[in-house]
Amino acid sequence: MKHEQMIGSLKNPMILSLIGLSLAVLLFPLFADQYYTYLMLTFFPYGIILLGFNLLFGYTGLLSFGHALFVALGAYTAAFLMSKFSIMYMEVLILASILISAFVAALIGILCVRYVKVYFAMLTLAFAELFYSFLLKSYYITGGDEGMSVLRPYLVGFNLSEAPKMQFLSGSYYYYAFVVLAIALFIMWRIVSSPFGLCLKSIRENPDKAKYLGIDIIRYKWYSFIIASVYGAVGGALLAPIIGHVDIGLAYWTQSGTIVFMALLGGFGNLLGPLLGSLVYIYLLDAVMSITQYWRIIFGGILAFIVIAAPAGLVGIIELLVQKLRNIKGATA
Image (cartoon, rainbow, N blue to C red; front, side):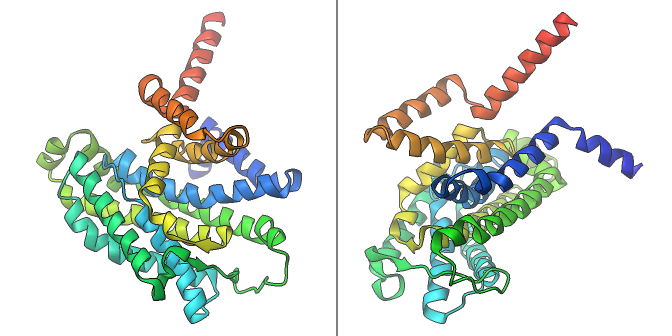
């Protein structure tokens, strides 16, 4: 019975598409040049960040304007441990980011999740700006506005410092980051498919009814906030060696805005939507910036179009096209 279910799941179009895309991403460095491979590499940490943000926004219904706080927290944790304590093992850096971000999110979240809509958004923004000010003023700890350099970490215990930087990033680190993203995606899939995930959806759709059914709304929102923050910090820790230098810009409100834009572009409330949004955003930004310096105007127009004409994002557009093709095939059959 289990064997038949496994075969049936492999025939699922979404799973087949995911497998095909995964193979394409794995083979990407073999066919693309180092620059475009580097762009794909930056997608991996942002994909993890967006998975967490989507749990909070898409599944729980809480829009955070301060998610960059935890991205910066993860990046600075990795940079600080490497530069101050010579802890070079990437697995230890990720684990430290998880623990620190979970602790900070638990403290902040217990206050924020008691509020909804714009009040929650503004509170998260306020805490992010406080952290931004801390990074700016604590020069001897964080480097202030100069930031901190990021050394090359060990991967699974191996010291790869002698390899050229781009070879390291487009080779070993590329596949390492891909595996971390795959693990994060699997864990998030298990979360949103579990009874916990169903409770979050019910809170998003109708909080009063969820409360009537016996769901502790505050507690579930708090759990969602912590998980989303941990994902943000893991993405930040993974991003630090890629950019090679962390600075206060990672904690600025525009970084949170970029995360929101990616989620809206791909389509929130869908597990793969924000991943698609982050991937398209990275390559689209590179293409537009190579053409004009007024890229913000173009992206502002794209955002307006999505909000007005395609609120379900790219995933919604794809699903609509697939449905139309099925209807055409059904009519001609």
